Image 1 (cartoon, rainbow, N blue to C red):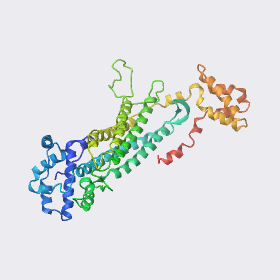
Image 2 (tube, rainbow, N blue to C red; image 1 turned 180 degrees about the horizontal axis):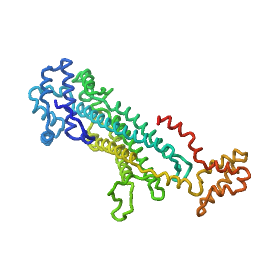
Image 3 (cartoon, rainbow, N blue to C red; image 1 turned 135 degrees about the vertical axis):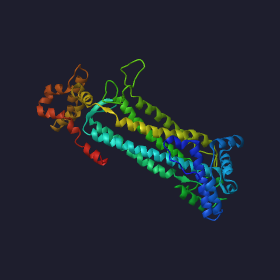
Length: 431
């Protein structure tokens, strides 16, 4: 048997060669289980393991004639093995090999995704701590709301990614499923003990109740979870794009020496990586519909799912892995501009502190309705006036100065009071 080679990249997991390698692993694991349970000679298995091999080009040549991929594969393997090859695939149906091998591919892909996800998590932890006290304006509906910190924003991203990691760890267990139960899944021609022993050798669990295939709800779950992770990455990318807008410019993608942003406009520094991530998330999300439609097969099986999976599963695995690499590098090298954050936070004279003024007035005994009217009038005046200054207007309004002292008014515009409880969030995330 060919030793499994070290894979340098996600794309290698979805080559024909690796696919055939996993098929061979499954077939040999079944032979080993058959021999251990006394169904076939042990020396025949040793000879199979020593001689088994395949040639992807030869498999395709045979398939062009027989129009069946597994038969073409078995024919080619037997060209290497010879007489003991008669013990290969005993009691099996094609889906025993295809679905069990596919699980090996999906688990291997998920392991690489989880490995890259850990790098992203560490990048977020580092930048969230770095900017723990970098004050900026929080926004809702795209409109200035109240002060936050950039580290707090990143902490929210971290919490979301940690939830995604937990889901993928659970997913790895749910997809690590094998099926060696023969045609229509009844074990009519193979002992269930062979399935159990084969799966143990492959690091899988036997399916609870397969038909002729492993039910595609598992694979749909796989695609949905990767689509969900991609949607999270898209959310982060869209936020970076918004914060990089010229009129905001609070963060910016790293722009390398010699990089050019536009063929026409030399000044341009575009958020191209974030835009690329947004587009890739759309592709992965579109596959989630196909994965759901793959669940409904005719009776105990058909192959309407097969052609979809040949496109869908490599796409979602490779793209998710690439997206994680991109967002990790983007976050690690993201340029952050605290001075621009400070500038944006204080436009219109600090209207984002309106709630603090409101609550301070209410604490002095006036009704919330009256306080709201006073604060809103001054805030809108600042908003609608060239170089409007909310703080100055509040400080000149007799309805306010008759209740609050200058020091009390000044304290309303201290961003620190908005940050007093952020440590509790950092503690939950162990930052």
